Image 1 (cartoon, rainbow, N blue to C red):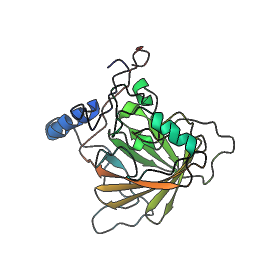
Image 2: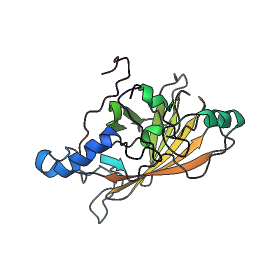
Image 3: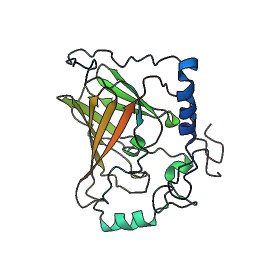
Length: 258
């Protein structure tokens, strides 16, 4: 693979090609009891001020290692309502996933560019959620990306620079964590099949733990420059209490990133 060590799985013509991390994760699961220790972040640890429920976990405790339940490639099965320019850009994209997958994919992550938000939530590698006072951290095994969700402020800075991960703030509505993200550059795809976006992208997520082992992420995409109206989707994660994050680093063909 001349673009780098990251290989996106073509679910149609190349279904035998798996992510390195998924293969490693399978081996790790089989050997976990003998070789690895349980994650230092106990899944049943209490969070001050949040009510315990009878099943023995706090719905406001999202900490732990999570893996997407299904290898989904986009947030919604329905095609989102694209603006004309965005539709043309989407049709010209060359993804490595889905019905338009091609062997000469131009997926930005093949050049080791960050997936960005919300696409990072679709990458089939585990993530670890860590909650500290005033902040929730998402640690991604995929290239060691970190997402900061600030719980100690309710507004975004007025002079935001556009970045890959944007600026995320969050607050609790009952047992649901609402995450509001803006300040994203337009260099990423929204998903694995190549839906574009502009620098006006606004992502709203509602994270909820419906039971001990299930984390649901309800996503709303607002981008008036690229879409005629907001659209929504969902991602579901399964808790993996015996996993820990492995080392995975994307290295492009020039060898500059190792």
